[in-house]
Structures are given as C-alpha cells and as structure tokens.
Amino acid sequence: MQTVESIIIGGGPCGLSAAIEQKKKGIETLVIEKGNVVESIYNYPTHQTFFSSSDKLSIGDVPFIVEEYKPRRNQALVYYREVVKYHQLDVHAFEEVLTVKKMGKRFLITTTKDTYQCRFLTVATGYYGQHNELEVEGAKLPKVFHYFKEAHPYFDQNVVIIGGKNSAVDAALELEKAGAHVTVLYRGADYSGAIKPWILPNFESLVRHEKIDMHFNANVTKIDEDSVTFEKEGETYTLPNDYVFAMIGYHPDYDFLQTIGIDINTNEFGTAPVYNKETYETNVENCYIAGVIAAGNDANTIFIENGKFHGGIIAQNIIAKKQTPLES
Image (cartoon, rainbow, N blue to C red; front, side):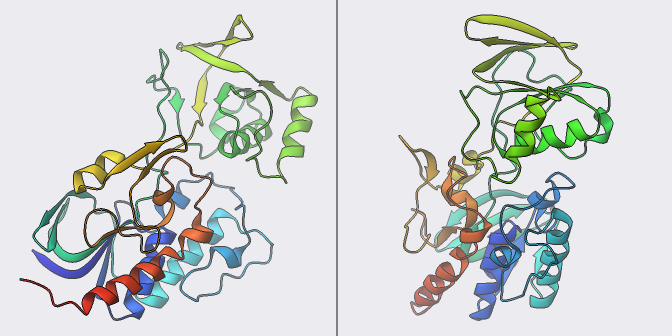
C-alpha cells in the first residue's frame, strides 16, 4: 500500500490544474487516471475546434500559444502533455479506481494496479465518460454510437444523428463533408441556443440546400438493423439506416460518487453532487470535487475555462486544514 497526502482522481484539465495548485503549496499529490492525461479531449472528434480561445484553456501559468484564435483538439493534447512535463506532475495513467472507502481520517483507495491511502481526496472525473441512455428499442445495437471520432468510415452510408446541440451538429458537419447521407433528428422545436455561433450558419445552409436532412420535434421510437423509426407531429416515419449517433449528452458517474458517500441532489435544475460552493468540499470530510463534475447534469455551466479555478480554492482549504494535527 502506498501512502500519499492527497490523491486526485481524474487527469483532465481541471484535475491537472488541481494537482498543480496543490503541488505549488507543498502538498504531496498523486493523479490517478483511467486513461491517459486529458482522456476526454483525446476522445473528441479528430478535427474538433474549441469554443474558447487558448488563453482561457491554459492552466498552471503555462502559456497556450497557437496561431489561430481558437485551438484545435490536437493542439490541446500537445499543450496539456507539456504542462504535465513542465510541472513534473505524478500521474498514474491507465489505472482505474475501483473503490474508495473512508477509514477514520483517511481514504483507502483500491485501483486496478495498487492500493493507496490519503488524507485528502479530490474527484475530478468529469462527465464525458458517461453517456446518457437512449431509451428506445434497438438502442443497444452495435451500429449505435454515443461518441463521434472520424467521418471517413461512413462515406456513402445512411447515418442518423439523434440530438441537436454541439456534439450533434459537429458530427453532422463532418459526416456530410465525408459524403455520408445525414439525417438529424432533434426533439426540440428549433435550433438550440447552445450551438456554437460560428458553426450554425454553415449547418443551416446545408439543411436549406438539402445536404443534411433536419427534423425538429422528432422522437425516435425504434432502431432496427437497417432502419430508424421516429414520430413527428403525430406522424410516424421510417428511414433506411446503416449507423446511428445518439449525441444526447453526458453525465457524471453518480454511482461512483455515491459509493464514496457523496450525496447527490436533484431539483428543478437537474442532478448534481452536494458540495460547499466556497470550498468545493463535499459532505464527506476532506473529499472535494473539481471541474465540470460539479455542474452535474447541467454541463453548460462549468467548463475547463472556469473549472480550472476550483483547484486553487481546494488547495487553500487543504492548507487551512493542515494546520489541524492529523489524528492517527
């Protein structure tokens, strides 16, 4: 068993930022990541462009310099790798946390490779690893995907995209460009206000010119091996189909949070973990959450741009607590 003062679960930008802030304050910190650093960004579509400028995505006082105003996925991967090297962060990659148990004043953590104990725990696992479930017949067929990576394999294929926000629109644009026959089915009545403003005109133009077939107020009812059935304004339609991308959102791993003992709250705004807004400490003493996970289901309130600041607040709180002698 390894003993570390502080462990951070999750090596995304917000987890790395938390590790940097703790290290700056002399707190011995280990990051445990089930993939490799910034795994969620690695899983973005290959040609993804970020919503924000590079300076807003930078962490740890390391400048993120690119020629364009908005960086691309590959540039971000290079940048965050360099940040890890520059700050000499201790990251255990490809190691998944299986269980977390609070034993007195310490956390006992079991992973796929080792066991650890620590006094302070920060959960920065994001939400991109857990997709929302599509609850229709055929949703588990192998042709149904929840993440979009590359368009090339779908050349000349009939592809349905379910959803109407950024992930859906980005996928539709890439697929159309690669020669797929694209239909977008969205339950909303009009284009979502969350769509990045610089891509919507292009998307609307493709719809107007019938390069992309767009259906609003559409609810998918069944997916078969070679078709998709949906309802729209009281009518039922069936489309020939080869592949489906269900881009209907993502959410934190609530089951994992609850096994730690973190309370989950559901109200009219959605579902989110319970934590102190001043310190990011959860109802479990010395257990913090950082980054987009704090937003729960409402992924449009916390991003890398503001989630990266959680780490500094958490580090300050840990330092304050360290003035209190640890009870053995």
